[in-house]
Amino acid sequence: MLALTAFFAGAVLMALELLGSRLLAPSLGSSIFVWGSLIGVVLAALSAGYALGGLAADRWPARAGPALVLVLAGAWILVLAARGEAWVAALAGRVADPRWGALLASAVLFLPPGLLLGSISPWLVRLAAPATYRLGRVAGNLYAVSNAGSIAGTLATAFWLIPLLPAATILKALAAILAGAAVLLAGRRHLAVALPAAAVLGVAVVPAPAPAAVTADGARVVYQRNTLYHHLRVEDREDSRFLRFDNSWQSGMYLHDPVTARFAYTDVMHAGWALKPDARRVLLVGLGGGSIPKRVLASYPDVTIDVAELDPVVVDVARRFFHLPGDPRLRVYVEDGRRFIRRAPQRYDLVLLDAYYADAIPFHLTTRQFLEEVRSRLAPGGVVVANVIGALEGPRSALLRAFYRTYREVFPEVYLMPVLPVEPAELQNVILLARDDQGEPGPLDGEELARAVEAWAARHPELEALAAAARWIYDRPVPVDDVPVLQDDYAPVDALLHFERDNPLPDVLRPGGGN
View 1 (spheres, rainbow, N blue to C red):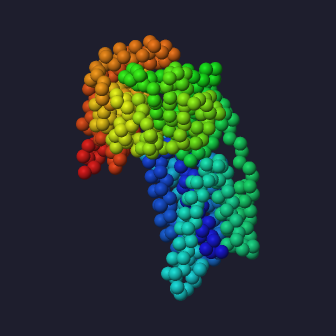
View 2 (cartoon, rainbow, N blue to C red; view 1 turned 90 degrees about the vertical axis):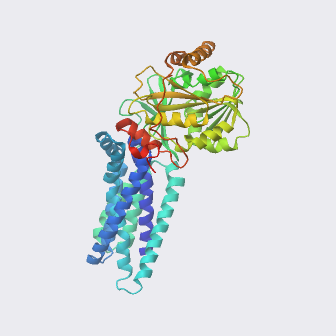
View 3 (cartoon, rainbow, N blue to C red; view 1 turned 60 degrees about the vertical axis):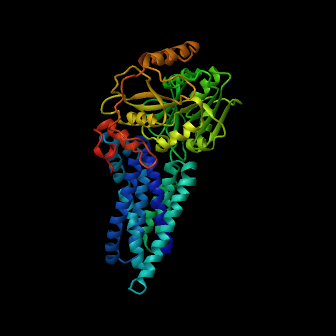
């Protein structure tokens, strides 16, 4: 029973760490800061738990001790199931810096159960070897079993539990496992363990309440689900439907008109056709709710579009809730965008990148090496169009300027089109255009690009935001000496995103600053 207890404690702790990302994501996102905070807090909790568990084991060398600790850990996990997300939201609202907000929330939620579960293994070692006889073998075996449980908990939670069940349901199951293990460890004679364990089991088996049908700000929740990558939610607000990943807005659609752009940037991305009017073969990386392919199919009857979308649930949601059509000109591939580009059998006239979002950026889709792979799949004169959230100037512009510098390393022509006429120092959607100019005229100045965009918008008046955006094309010099070229081995996009919002760019993130 001691080995089984070690297995369960290890499994629950790692499952809890993975579930922590789902509790933190709605308020804090899923950046490297969130994962770093979770891992650091769990390791700190284990270190403290090992030390305290060893002290407690020498003082109370009886099974009732670790059994009660398991019950306490289970009770705390039940509290997380009921109040975890609310606590994270409250803590996130008090700390502006996303690093310290993630660290504080991780510590408040996961330091107590991590410490309790960390104390179990040394206690079990003491129980298994009351004398020093073969103590090394006993300790080694129990820690090996505990780590085996950690492996099982990690894989089961990541591969099956999170994609299939709500986080609250999984947390309650973990609490029940700990309560059951406590009873088995202590034995029936220990009523001091059996009664609180029964209470934890009783609460755990009560079905979790159904998710709220209406959000705190009045949106109607149509659908929500944990996927392998996000907590996904579909919301209706007045005349519109929206898709959200964690705490980020992804797509929008008018309920009465599924094709007209709800977010202006999707219209402005059609500026790619202004640089490549004869484009017929299009690749989109990142599906979201399908706003871009719906408009492409409706506006360009002779265009075919391939879509690479990592998350199969997103594809299903786009078809079920956002009217993504089944059209022979549209092919959707459930695959990472970079991997798809590497194996793509054909060349594309346009590559549209809409996989970056406000709180987390897949760094491997930003680097010079990735852009070189994209360029290799472009037809002569092909164009890359990327939607980036950033500022054009000022202290919050580091991320966008790093994008610009990286694109200039690969493409001879790079242009910036802000979607809205706001101050350059404000965060907004900026459309980045890059052309492989083989067989095409040389680089355009701002006025020439504006005329080309206006001409295309005149041919397609349904692209309401495109003509407007042509009036505020950004043609000032972009300073890039203080930002890095994004590389596969060094692409600090999360840090750039953070520091551009709140702080000056530190020297370590500047070119050469890490050497």
